[in-house]
Length: 224
Image (cartoon, rainbow, N blue to C red; front, side, top):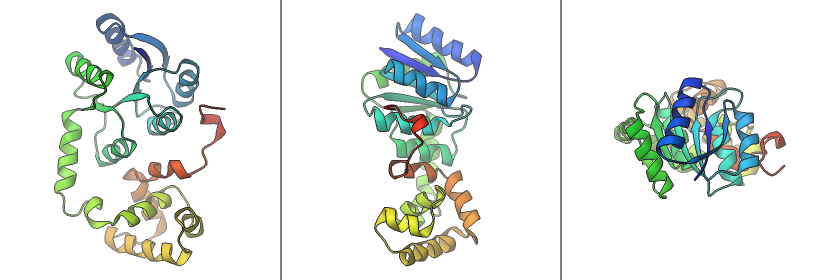
């Protein structure tokens, strides 16, 4: 299997390289330490599997993953992160990534299990992600419980920095309808200004879900 490793921590990158090449006998066709470099290498190599750290410099791993999946939907992505908070979990969930491993839990055995699962067409998520999801589902005040699907979609575009008029055009609704949804969001989320609402959206991972309807910079498209 052809693999690209995207990891900015040199020691962990070397660990992954050794695991993939020596133990799993996979072919590493590229390595990158930052977002734009990762996209360039992926353009050139078209790997089957990408090991992707979410917290990489210059361009977030979430943006890289979304761009890759838009252009190469059959690519399998195993996300890595030292953070498994609600924001990260929501982003991973919305992207439908092949797997996620908390770097704080990572071991040779766990990563081997994850890579084997994903290579076989299955999905794999480490225990910390599962626990965060369970806690989120059990929380009666979680955004998934208190917001309607339409309100979550509006929040996505607000997090992406769109105006009411732009959101209305994207969703096929009038600006006044968007304003009504915005007022509901203020009340339900207990925020009192648009900057607070934008901050909540971005910290909760809603901004990235708007990528499929936002014009991405050509600099980062795979088919330039």
